[in-house]
Length: 251
Ligand code: NAI
Image (cartoon, rainbow, N blue to C red; front, top):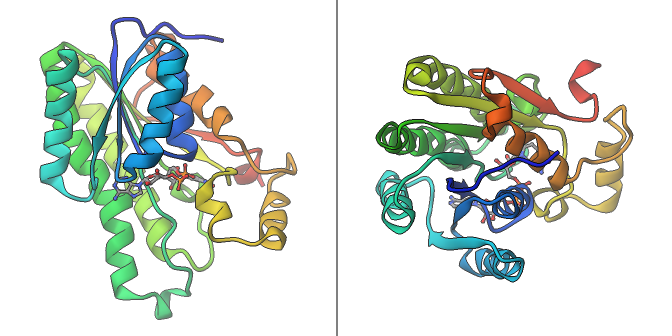
């Protein structure tokens, strides 16, 4: 299934790697002009080159999404560069430390909440205002299966992703009348650097086996759902949370 994003401007945070790179690449192939927002300028450069090689249009904005001033400047950059903002995917995130709650480090807690939760509020604050100016739009917030179930050793990540669902619902209700839809996606464990940088082969195999489908997900599978939710084909869908998890949460 392909979508038509001609004449649409899209912003993707965490676009230099993994899920964000797959979403940005697919959006560009379906006609959108993309702002690739990431703190990793080199990784974003690789995604930009791949998009340009296939005739797509994109620009890089180097950012720390945990800084509200930088987020405000990112949205202003999208409007200035392409004349407006219609689509946004708030996807940048980190895994954070692994420890039981009583031992969870305070600095790790603050970092994960800043990057995985506060940033989604900052992004939506400025994206929603820009989409009102553009006459409508669609936002997808990247949550996780851990937006609806717990996971040992990941208090901050689980709390942040549950919070992302709350922000999604609140904004969806407030902005439906402006023609702006806001949804959340809940991937199972996906084969990206976020996992492969921190887990060895045995741990990856164990985690893959936690999904009834019996493998890790692929970034392209998350991109397919995300782009559907951004598209006009999802015109009656808002405020909702959509799993792409190989059956993980059904157990
Ligand atoms: P990844 O590590 O491959 O990519 C994350 C990107 O976010 C990187 O390019 C990184 O530079 C960027 N980023 C991190 N912190 C940033 C900051 N402060 N400012 C700007 N950019 C920043 O990770 P992946 O797997 O693609 O994750 C993307 C999103 O999907 C995250 O929100 C993650 O929590 C979520 N997710 C990932 C799952 C997985 O198993 N890989 C499962 C469920 C959700």
